[in-house]
Length: 277
Image (tube, rainbow, N blue to C red):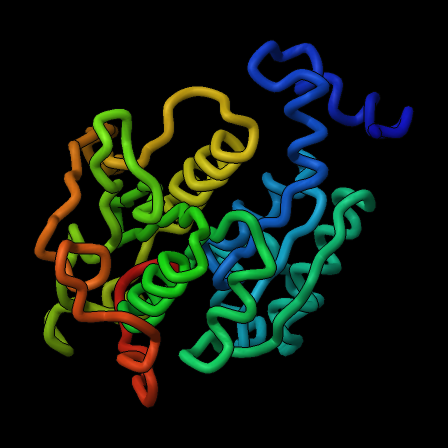
């Protein structure tokens, strides 16, 4: 049940017919894991907390640095040098004391991914490297957890929802990350954001879109992005949505899967990518 203070806090949700009291209770009961407390993780954490998601998990093994603050708005100058998960927890406590924050000051790997991801209902990937993205996607598939994915470049962004453990209205499985990107690009072919830069507000736009999709998945409002990829071009001020289909030959969720556990990720080191750092 919502307390009188929560009713007051969430009244704009409560009068919204697509959310209402039932939807707000779903948000309060929900457990969402955010991978990375960086550029995408910042708006994700803040908007999910503001919306009243009852439990937020955040995993990151990095510390706040001064050059993070141009885009990672969940952190501030006073927290430079502190673990990002602790900094994020402090901010959320100030924003909404009704939200429980579970911190994981660690790097997600093949040994801990299934255990951590299985504790949550929905996973939001705000990671900044291909190794972690494939690991998160594969682990969510095995744990049967919906994954809301986003990535950014210097002036562009991408958002979609993966739930390949479920099927669409026609009975076909939804696509996985490996349906779009069967393999990671060769090392060195994708520039690192520390080299090419990123407009700070880009991660705010894309992370907010990602938070919106997570809230939709929890409340059931609107149409899921599963099977569709939303593309944002900031330079031209343009959004585009393209259909993404299940690939029956993909190695994870295809007809003859080659990946049956997370052992493929053992001993892999994250490779840099221009994304959500």
